[in-house]
Image 1 (cartoon, rainbow over the protein chains, first blue to last red):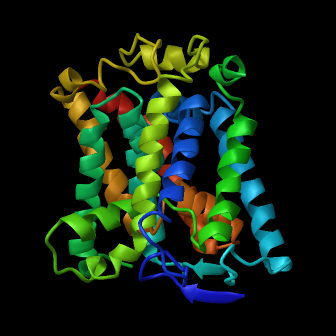
Image 2 (image 1 turned 135 degrees about the vertical axis):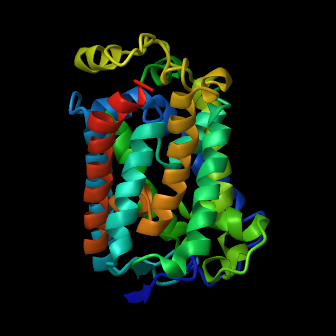
Image 3 (image 1 turned 60 degrees about the vertical axis):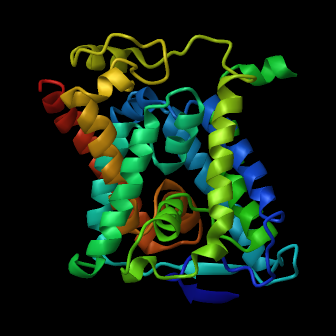
Length: 155
Length: 187
């Protein structure tokens, strides 16, 4: 099992990828977007319900996802399952830094204000609420400002 | 079949499908599931910059852009062909609490009096949409990931940093819903 520190992006596949081989990620994204809308994860109201502790819905979604992902990851590690290109799966490691706390809190503020984490922001633009394009552009601006200030921020 | 799919999906179905995305992306492409990194790739590809943070091989990350375009298309499919046949219902205690803030329309999945182009030009709308969006982009990248990268992928890989980040996401959300929203809605 290979371990690397994540800094330079997230794609660990060694086999080259053409534009067409990237098309499968659109398909996965489409399924994912449908799940977001159908389970109402894109709803500002569902997010308020979660933070008001008034419903189990979102805790159920995230909790189940974590359990399924953990079991699958353990199975891949234990059985050393290779990718469809025969490569060893790389599990990137993100060491702790102060950004996890400060950035985490700031994202928490943004999550409850917009009622959306990054995935649902894209989903909402598609599901008939075009004003979320503004939220999305604002999020990209936020990342841009972070990138410029990165050296000056505590980590 | 289509009829079954049109009802709102149970949380366990959504949780299983989202959870399975993690091994799927590992096995078909050696990629960790994460969505907020797309913001970084968009900046690196489209905006002029010299910052170190944007100086990496973003072309290798094209898959992530395809993935988020897919989510957007999935949003269209989920709200049209597969749109919910049932009425949208949220917890009555949440309705009551939000009604005290002045939100009265609970028929759509978001409060359209705020999340619309007319709402955008009010103080509330500006804070929720523009300031909120900015904090999502700034915070996720500062934290090194979002709900998908940290809370799901990171925790499933037993990363302490991801658990800490997730706890902070939740604390930030609780503070906003209970303390900030009542203030913002008085503005």
